[in-house]
Length: 482
Image (cartoon, rainbow, N blue to C red; front, side):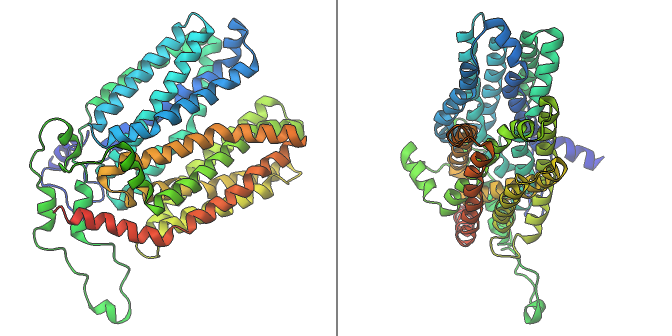
């Protein structure tokens, strides 16, 4: 009965009745993670409805392929434009309320897409939807760090980031619903789960900003397993009452300070951005993951075309294989990366980044080998292995960003990451297309991205030294607020 009450208290973000301790890897329960995972899934499904119904929309309004192809590019540019301001807002106001309002805006934009009377209005709604979707990402990243300590961050960041690669569900739903009931029905129906998700997020309780960091700081840094003479010396316990002092926080005042939880003044927008960009680990990891997104986005966008041209596959078969390989590989890589990163964290210098950087480098190299295969079976097997290894960087690198950016600036930190990821996703397919037209070879064009992907993994590996220093600095700053 007591356990049931505790689970209910933690269902939507309430800490356990006895307070939060450093030994609890999941103090708020899995409820907040489930809610934010649903946000990510609804986001990606709504964004990918367009590709599923595109032939039906073109048949009604008769616009060109060039106009159709410009929609995701314009949407990505709009999303990139709002990324940094979104981080600024996430560091100053209630993140749960920001996400709830944004999700409601998604639902309204999706509804507007289904009711649009002409292509221009439809186009506008799709661009607005993409911009709104990018506003919630920094708030989600910041919230997860305040709900879950370092021991759990790889799992929650890995699975929430993984939703980006599961957008094929939206393409499938759009095609099935559009074929059965018309393309407008796909957008009208999808507005319903969007509105319900907004209500769910609104009920999610806002955690105190930086509380988890203060408790982690009170407990001290992770200890490597003792050996030799050190084995006889027990690890030093945290100062008496430190965890209780970190856990017992007076209720913050209503308004902006209630969302910040620390009452400290924040710098204006651009000084805060420059301050965050001075975090070496953040910049290097974000650049490495951006290059990975640029490469995977460009290669896998054109992969069905390569299979059709190189092996004579039907379009539906090639698309199904490409999508299936991506989904299975990302799922497997996320689980593998979380497991390896957890085992190495605190035992090997920059252990998480060792997993992520090596995953990008090895996976990208293997992808280059896969594209040379003359057998479709060998191609698919090596592609699956390459995606799985590369995807180990999703949970490890994202969790590291939460570790090296302080609680008061995590919104801007994740906004920097989201900005770079959006740029990568927008221009990867375009680079391959332009290079293919210039060289006359789609395969050569893909290698224009694979080489930078390998270098991106090496960039991530170079951040291992700065990670330890900057993560320790975040805990030192948190320790100073005890």
